[in-house]
Image (tube, rainbow, N blue to C red; front, side):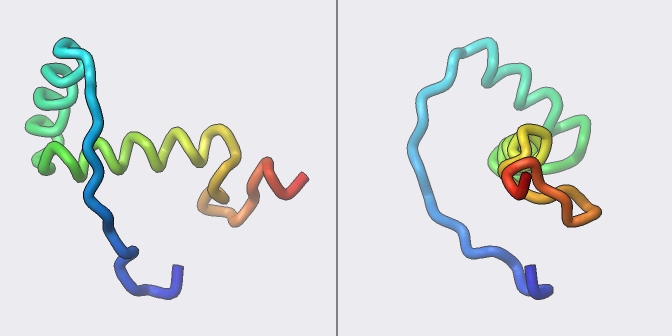
Length: 63
């Protein structure tokens, strides 16, 4: 990214109640809003599976 905050879109999703409770607890422990915590978790997953480049700029999709 070029130093600017990414654009955000609102979405509606359905989650299991136990997942919601776990995310609420973890987001509170991390002192982050619920939606911001979910965004961080999803971004980390996308990096892990190679969809987004990691901090080094390397992506599995590039291979």
